[in-house]
Image (tube, rainbow, N blue to C red):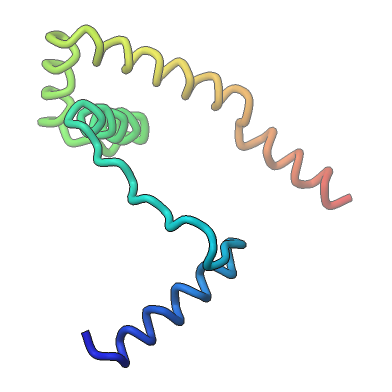
Length: 107
């Protein structure tokens, strides 16, 4: 690595560290832990659920989701809990309520 690039990286590192309140004496940040295949599956399941809620999940993926949920009890439990949480959040923070809170904050 040329010294120019190393200097640029060091400079950017200093800028980032000062922005987040770190100094040179702090331990370096550890890399993010690697996701397990189960974590990736649940992330993918969550993305599919959100797309289905938005009405943009393609029909072939709706079928795959149905098959997945019918053969994986943990995925089905996750699906139910995810949808319950979504429903609670929608009922607590509907657009109307958020709009009212914003208008109250402005006054």
